Length: 118
Image (cartoon, rainbow, N blue to C red; front, side, top):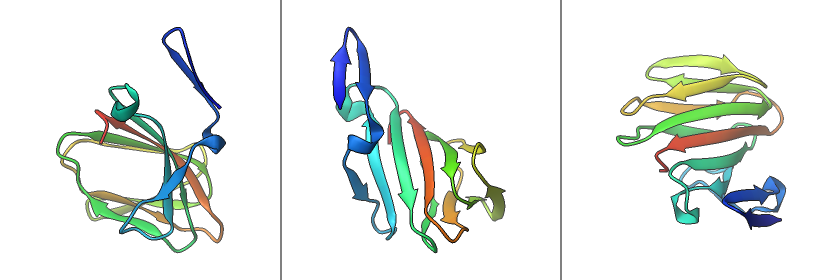
């Protein structure tokens, strides 16, 4: 369900189509909000299969915040790895190399906010 109501958006994340975030196999994103949908920032629901990762990347124009919903993750910032679990987040400024790895035996579920959108 996605509804526009008087300047607001109401949606069910599970109803949004997820696409694989290639070349990172086993990583899927559903875009909930973003510049293509009329917002200045991007809001995404991500899932990652066990043993998969988002390779180190860098965004010159965008800050990124990752919030872990369920599972066990390793946040990668520069050359460091930081354990992350449900209720924890990692915020990455522009021009900082970063990544995310599923460190658990089950799926990793997380939210991503990019400002401005990617």
